[in-house]
Image 1 (tube, one colour):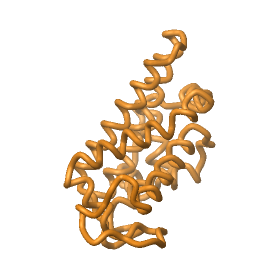
Image 2: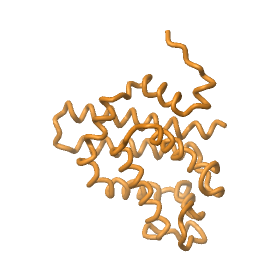
Image 3: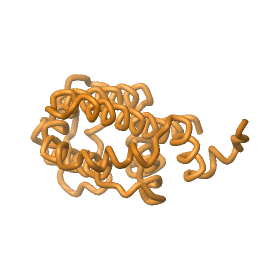
Image 4: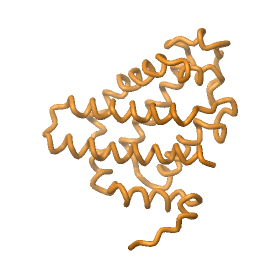
Length: 190
């Protein structure tokens, strides 16, 4: 039986990442599958980003988080949620961030900087990083991650890849997004 330092899981990002990847079976083969899907998924990133934002726009409890000034955004902000349209510059700014996130997942490398990046994605949706006005409740982050996972699976299932390749890709992305979800959730418990 392997001994795990549970306190270190909370204080050492690399230790936590290594534990999670070993536990869920996310290794070199899964990373290679994800990196190998870049050419297939890159042209679909804008469609995926649009689908995510269309989903977020359907609910006041998710859309309201885009009213406060977003970290790094320098333009005009809306006064209220009703003023925030899908074509507002702040939404375009956020869409660019999501596109870069998705691109980074499929271009790697999966090293210490990627681990820090996955953790920062979790922090930026709380008051711990970025805007002190933005705190997205965990239930909404979980719902979003579920939607993103399903969207990625839908894209992969629609390809004409051999079934074995589709299966490997779906499993690799599922594991990665569960790891990402852990790096989000950890910022809601402290």
